[in-house]
Length: 353
Image (tube, rainbow, N blue to C red; front, side, top):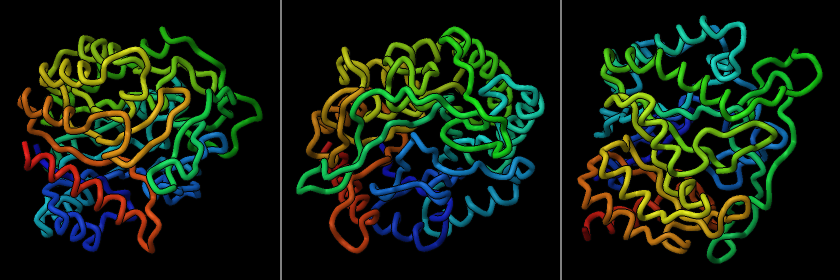
């Protein structure tokens, strides 16, 4: 198993690459959609919150990733002794009508395919993504972690409708007419997703890129009046069965999966790691279940993370593990401190195995 660090777009620089390498990381995950810099309240230091109001603006719809910038990013990581394992998340500006089945779907599907081909040409092996209309919602913040460290959680469902011109908590059309996004049912969302997979998996196979789907966070059948795709662990199997290709894998978020009620998280880890369907792992700990939970330090929540890592190792998982969210320690550099604690803990457990 390989230790990695997720970096947002404003962090994709020599300073943060050096930080990752100094803490023992060998890999990085690049979040090219920098919603963190678009006005989000961000007390945890690494993940936007406040989904009711939205996270800010989507990017420039006319500017998709170029091969040159992807190559430069990979080389920048390599110069620090790191491998760029994945780019994570597509900007709603580039695929909102894929998610919404809107009038620009064909044009935006062509852009998504182009970006996948460019990832492959640039030598970046994985694209992580989340097929969601509402995105993360109903987050609350407070001193939920050990020693009253600031963290995030959820205190009940969010039924606030999604405004027109918004998807995944980001505004892609500031001039959209008043009103809200019409609700759809789960069958329609799965139809859209199946059509998406059917088009992009052959492109990913040809480009040598693995697609990795994140489960819905928070995991609930509906959020903000819109259905969710993977809100139960067994729905990951449906994703796999839709396209049983090596290019169709999972962005395996243990924290989100642990928030799902009525299942055994260790059986879920065993099931999908035995199938070899995990592209890479997000590791964080929680207390409680959706729709009421709190995120904790990696070593204090309800999930036995040593057991999770032991199962992954037993089943031959050799991919990248990153801490995705961390509570905010009381110090001048809370993001760095939180990540250093999580990375050191994970590295110690991996070494002990």
